[in-house]
Length: 255
Ligand SMILES: [Zn+2]
Image (tube, rainbow, N blue to C red):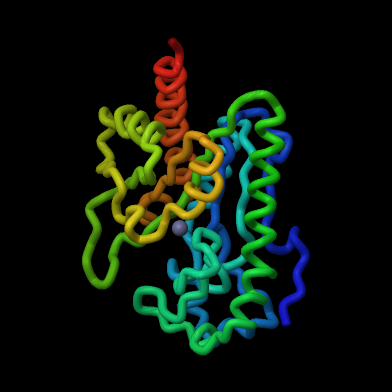
């Protein structure tokens, strides 16, 4: 079934970026390869937040520009393969996402799951690992920052949180960013609207914790990043917090 080239599945923006920060956007795209026949979804569902993180890539691009950082972004919908999930997670190829039922994922057998994993997850994982290696070879210890967006209403309930700062067992960068965000008027919360218990820290664990790199996952409520102006402003705000946080970590790390 799905033969794919790495560059069709994942892209590295600003690959020559000099910053130790490596940005990641696993849910950057709503694209479903034609051979998967829209996974049986209608147009509305295909373009909804179930399929991707609206606005997240634009915010990450603004951050990449401000920081001169590399940005690794998936070019495939998370309904095809959610690159923030390991292959054995049922929601790596979800048969249902919030209210959206995904007919094309309803009866995937082991062969089909492996085929999707090979075609979409492995190239993403390898590209991110390589980008971190290239960054480490430039001399500074890499810092992993993943950028996501979430829907303001979930299963009918409005969400008050505006920015989530998420972490797994390494809390260094999240702690410092939460502190940097304290003066902000935005509603900023730790491990909201998701946390490690929801399986969302896969990329952080796989590429950050395993290497000892400081890491954080940023979740932005998508109604706050609907326009280009909002996306740029949000990117700048997050960069301000991130740079303050990194300075603080560096100071604390010194004897
Ligand atoms: Zn996401």
